[in-house]
Image (cartoon, rainbow, N blue to C red; front, side, top):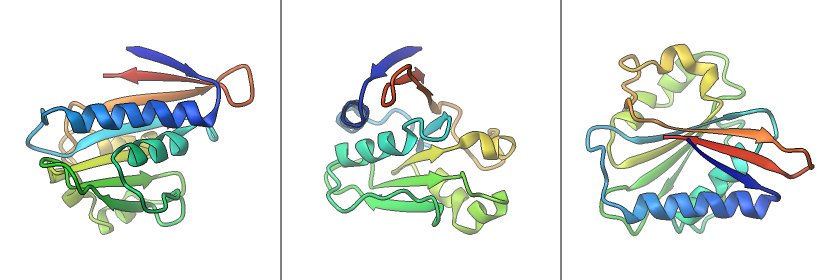
Length: 159
């Protein structure tokens, strides 16, 4: 487990940018399914800020907003030979997993050219078990916790 502390939004975004650059700078390890980053933690814990930093770190210049109401947003990666899209999924308002299936979850997860950032993965935990949705077994789990100060965060990477 790797643990990082950030004291403001910019540091959280910068940490995510570094991870994106590391992921995109390395040769892809998993060739069978999408790379999944499961972002969990309390409301306001920094999940969306981190996702925005990761997407920006992939050199995506278009406006990045939370998919809270649309559930899924996707961004095209232009300069990488293995990865072609980043999907940002926010399960906070999800009522039924069927909604994700209707939005193409199986196809998204089965495409090895995708990177998938999932906020609130615990909401669909039962469905996320390996096999049902075809999630890869080597998910990068990232947990966000509020710090003692207002914008301070502890970010645990479980790789």
